[in-house]
Amino acid sequence: MTSECAASAAAAMNSVGEACTDMKREYDQCFNRWFAEKFLKGDGSGDPCTDLFKRYQQCVQKAIKEKEIPIEGLEFMGRGKEKPESSS
Image 1 (cartoon, rainbow, N blue to C red):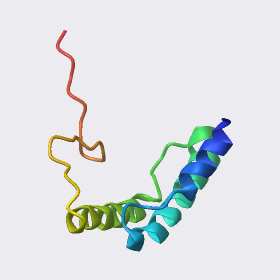
Image 2: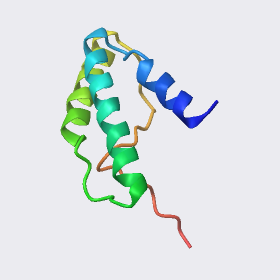
Image 3: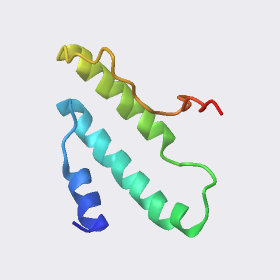
């Protein structure tokens, strides 16, 4: 599978909550545009999609609670989560 196919497949997937699917697609489009047009060309300054991501993340968290999907023990990576430093 090419990276374009993988990106298309990911963008076509629905969200865990039906109400979140449009937000997911909007965020996916924003991120993919930024990644291709800025980040891959060396401009890593700022991510214009941060607000979209935060709104989508809140929607998903609400849907997970409403559907009573167990997430105890799972770690989610996101902004503000640091990888543990390896002890050397």
